[in-house]
Image 1 (cartoon, helix red, strand yellow):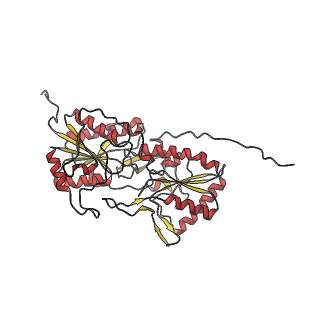
Image 2 (image 1 turned 120 degrees about the vertical axis):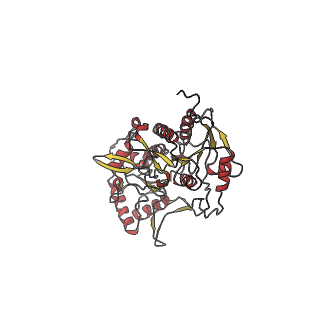
Image 3 (image 1 turned 90 degrees about the vertical axis):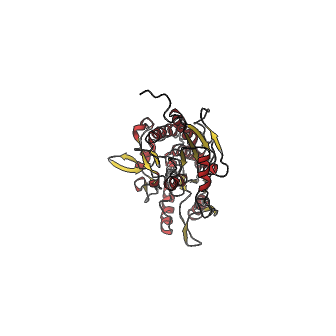
Length: 411
């Protein structure tokens, strides 16, 4: 029978973005909006994450509007608002969310975020029956997407989240740029990289030419620190130009000689509404201890928000479009409480809907860096991780200033 109208004409789908921003958020919004519109949905954008569903609501109409998916960040803006009670805000704001979903006649909600944002969406689905679909987002790449990586006959459970490819490319390029200043001063550069619980993003620095690395998965006890300093000294002395770049995750646990405790370094003790403090400053401590113990000039560099910023990479763009194709399938089957994910790690050309599946939002959780990717005895990312990244990034060529100038000896 001929279909006179689009399948979901008269229904409304709303999109929100929560948590830290990434370069792939606008691409995710545009891709979901375009596909939902083709199905007949009116598409709304909820501003500032869950905050936009509080009070009187803060809603935009994205239907039939131009949208630049290449531009990084989120035009809907973001926040770390938690609608459920937390230590910072004990009041439940779920009634406000429900009121506004009804008031704006929102039939389906797509939450773009990490474990916190999508965890709240999942709770609304389970406790209130709200029709939600989660969409993955994180530069840390630590959501458990159950994406498999096939390498040399082995199957490694890996992760692939929108936002990570663009951020990894930024860290790779930043590391490659630091190379010349490290060489100029015969210096060790300690590069601090975002990564609260996992070292996925830190590994991108190895693709940019970093020699060693520290990740949250390896606790730096007093004994490990001593061994690490030995490895640093040997690697530095054996380097051709007496320089070294060491990326470290912000969430690395470091043994403090003064307190005798093993802990992360906090930039602020204040907690957000999901109970997370802000990390920062580990690179300065490590650089200082290297200089003191090894008598080698060492400086710290914090990448900060740089990997979150800028234009969406081509890989991220294709990734968000592919996952949005899977959202169409979930909408058609009314399969809510799900999140679209990639089945297996693949180069850009393999990012197609047939390589997607969906997982229950309640089963997402966090996925640390697999042991197959990092050698804790050498503090190096190994070939399997380099192979993982080679599917996502184009490894830069490193120009070398080759010289062997003769030393002048006075008469």
